[in-house]
Length: 154
Image (cartoon, rainbow, N blue to C red; front, side, top):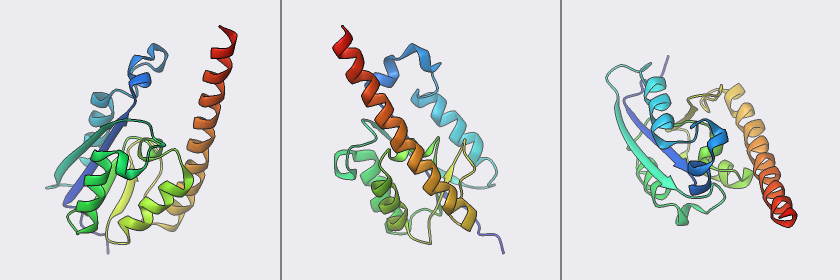
């Protein structure tokens, strides 16, 4: 039997650097993320959406991200059936942190990505989560290396 999704938490995150990077075509803008997440949530009729936002690095701890901290506190108290993110790297760019967040959400709150084939309720979705977490960590490392290299070139 399909689980009824009635209460959804949407998590949006961007960094100041991403907001200024014109090469990203606005995909990391909070408004673009929110639009995609709300459209994704339209698959569930009669749902209530609560949105949480952070402007910070995806490598910061939960404690350093007030939006994520609030979302997790409320999710752990049973307020949400699902958490939706634009992309998994919006939640975290650290494999351990991401897996800790999913564990903290537990079996009562499913995690979905609006732009990736991710649903932690399903076995395949949990496997995809691990792959996406690996690529998010890789992308962060490549970005850090690129910034470090560019700074030394100038």
